[in-house]
Length: 352
Ligand SMILES: Cc1cc2nc3c(=O)[nH]c(=O)nc-3n(C[C@H](O)[C@H](O)[C@H](O)COP(=O)(O)OP(=O)(O)OC[C@H]3O[C@@H](n4cnc5c(N)ncnc54)[C@H](O)[C@@H]3O)c2cc1C
Image (cartoon, rainbow, N blue to C red; front, side, top):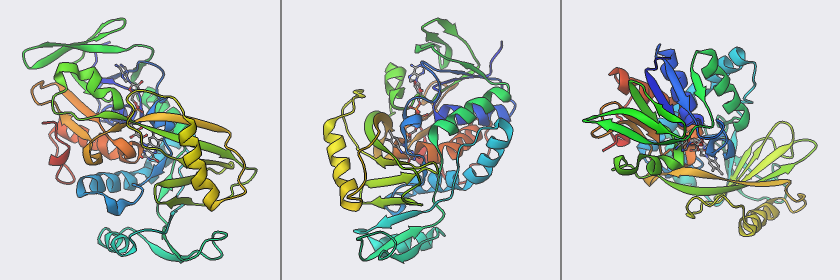
């Protein structure tokens, strides 16, 4: 089958890119080394917001806010068309002290981001003082989101090729002429790299200017008969994400250890210490896992055309917020391909 775009990588970013290109009428094939939706996008917490949004620069803020704004409607459509519920829920996020309250309130006011100070006594056992409730922060359940996205790409006529690793690029002049894969060469008019933490490895000599490296994150999973908390809690670097069925995810670590996907006793101990401080009676976790965030400087992804290969694009390096940013990032990529006007200045994401 003749293909306009070959997308490499079947995480949230590759799948939403495929969806956006298919919606524009392109013929799309997505190539995935393993099974789609099993890496960072599976491992993540599914919080649809930066953790402390006021900690980031405008490049992160603009993309995250646009992505967050797109999710509600997109998830209704996704569920209606695929029958798979991604469990999108605007559950809110309560930020516990210590925090930079004044800075946070000012940032929220400047960005029309709903925020309400909340007395913690009576809300959380043993907690004193004041927290900041961000009522519009939502969550999704990652594995379900990815399953639904995969289904939607297929429904739109996209082709998904799994268990096929892309090994490198064949080029002639300023163009990519094919992808060398574990099972022969694949050819398209244009190519998108959406391989997350592996993007720089895959690009090899063509990876100039792309600063993406794996940053391991570990999560603990708890299970209760009924949800012990009803909104996301954030205390400094530790977050608690309650699912409706009584699962609670607690994360996460930020570890610069290369592509070592082990789960460690150290991470479990340090996460459990934070859990015990807030919830001394919680049971032991039922599971622990790790994933590789596509780490990038200042958490700014690279979205757009390669510096010298005219038909090669990147959509990668979303670091801590790839799910949050995914829909907006796909929109920006398609705008660039189509030569359409962007919703805001996108110079910060350019591949230089
Ligand atoms: C512990 C943890 C918690 C997180 N929490 C959140 C959160 O709450 N909210 C949020 O927005 N984000 C969160 N993130 C970040 C988010 O998960 C990532 O930014 C996002 O998943 C990146 O998506 P991706 O599609 O670029 O990468 P991935 O999901 O990793 O997908 C890349 C895909 O490319 C494939 N691939 C790689 N190399 C090749 C090759 N050579 N050939 C073919 N295929 C290849 C891989 O197999 C993989 O499927 C979290 C991440 C972690 C690890």
